Image 1 (tube, rainbow, N blue to C red):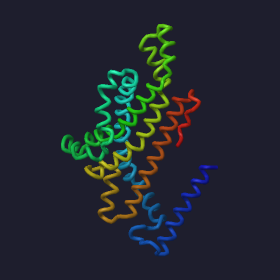
Image 2: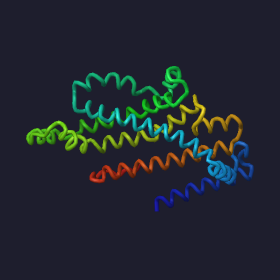
Image 3: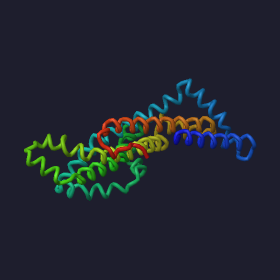
Length: 252
């Protein structure tokens, strides 16, 4: 029922846009009818242009996201368990956390040019801190009694990690990862708009500069669909991994 209500709201907004554009209430140059945008979207999708541009962006976003997860989740768990490591790294983390990801794009361009390397650096930077903080909080929230029990049973460090720490911290790490997913896509698009020769961000900006407005909105629509699919896929994967956790919903 909630999904149906959401779909009805979307259809109502689309119908309002269509009517306002066709009746001349808003400029058709800047707000072409939804039907025109939809036809343009279909043509560009069938031709393969839009899917190709979007796939380039999404692949970069996913690569940066997974790289951040591979590095920051273990580091965050280690910081949550080790006070010494936490004291060593926390000042650096707190210094870098407030820095907006776009602020490092100029430096990344100087070091890596406008290729994929620059975009991966910015995406990893943007995704690292939600995952890191989630892992640290998850490790620190573990009941000390669990560790004492594990020590009483003589569990090895490996068994302690996989049998106690990871299951207990998993939901917190997953929450940080979910926060990082849309950030990865946002930063990927932004980095393409600032410096790139391909990708959906570059395409949208190029269409805007050439006043190909229906094509611009078609690019935005394609990006929205990919974002929706990426978010839904993430929810499904995390729901399977954390199906044992009664409190994990995976939604908003």
